[in-house]
Length: 286
Ligand code: SF4
Image 1 (cartoon, helix red, strand yellow):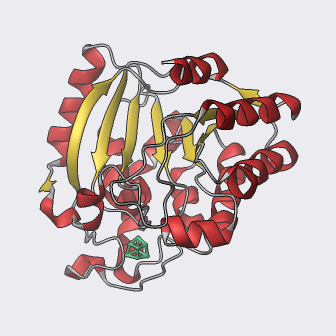
Image 2: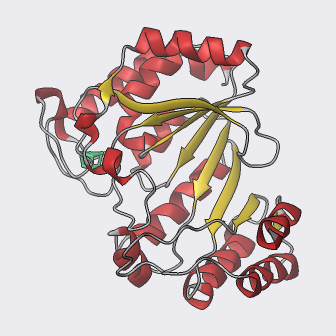
């Protein structure tokens, strides 16, 4: 964290609290008063709920071991979500004491974590609690904002200087697919804007899970956009998309070697900063 930004984290938490009174923290713009217990699309009020924290050894290259802290509640509805029960019903997750969580983070650092990895769910819908948390931490901790990047500009502003690395999931490359697979038809434009905003203030790793049947419509537009609008960012192409049981709109198969070869070849051809090419090939070879 930038030390000056860290000093203002408490003030920023108060600013975020004000925004909860008529919540427009993300493009859903629900307008509910979360301080009165009202909830909008994400289902999160003004409490902070986590459903998992762990040391993780299989994060992107250079980020391991990583202390993952999962916040409940999300503003997307991905059919292939691996933690849907916590995203759709965040009130089922235990409320946390911010001081206890700060203590746990210090313990994980002493156990070897080289960063704090904020994810969910979606951290943006929990920005109020996260800012309170960051205000209590040692500013030397490296903070990863592990996000779907579907949030309002004000969230990006509240984060300036506090997030060291933005681990940005770019899931779909067009609005038709994003509406069908994620439940958000304005997703692509919002994510592009937020990746550009993040790129101006910190390191960005764009992560894309290659999905069978979505090479032309999603993979290719995303890679071409990176080339023109965010050429310096690091790119992680992942082969570990997991088809959901009983998939309706989501792909029903795993990505195959041919899909991954197309993805890697195009990334190379465009001169993108692919960080996990070898790992991607090894995953496919297993
Ligand atoms: S953060 Fe939640 S309540 Fe606020 S606008 Fe987004 S979905 Fe609605």
